[in-house]
Length: 357
Image (cartoon, rainbow, N blue to C red; front, side, top):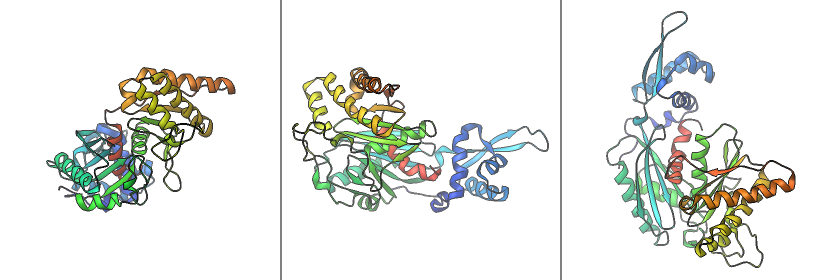
């Protein structure tokens, strides 16, 4: 298994280095001068020179030409070298495994999807993940780690799933640490919706607040408040699908009754997408009222296959709520940007700290 060959990972993740790398990442191919880096980070020119020299020596930064100066000699520009390092993103869904390899800029290099039975047992699942990671990393060096995303609830801080809806046997399994030993790589575990929301936040505007609602084999939410992913004090935020909306409703796999997820998935199974959208809209309106978010983004396998009924139905419920309160409706849109939002967002669990994000 390829790992962090040639790269000083602890130094790469130092605070000052992250500040510099963040500016190189933002500058793109155009590059940025050392003086500009010093001015924007507050670091001394000497510190910037030392950091950039090490990044150049490790192949993480390279020259990007020169910029004409208004006085003195032209300034040398530096840029990020995307291919210098990579990260793996894993989406462990209930019935399939998506594995992506992204470069240092977050751009996807390759992606694979394979069948997965999340209930087949930990050993079977870990073996499947290891096979896919080997396949996507076979020809690259400088793999910084793997981000793994799966249905919740789970504890992001300890890397341990709780009673995953429909698969309670995962409760208490040390998934993060077991997978790290198996892969020989650092691993970060988070909920699928959090991973997708993180990826969306990094592509969005600073300070934005939104809810990402994911409807696939289950229903969950990722919350971004003030531009930052919100996990909660015990990393359990976002269990959106298990809010009770009908006290005497049908049983849910979580053990409750009348959960949003149970009602929504039942409507999908009947082919009544208008009803599924109305139920999803009721949950979205609850979030809008509780959190005063700027927008609602929709994603997941079900919505991806029939976007229009959900955009229309959720938008209608949000508009009704706004009209009752004399407010402007919260806009709803599809979460565009990538065919693998959860897996690519999972890779950002590894990359984001490198850039101080």
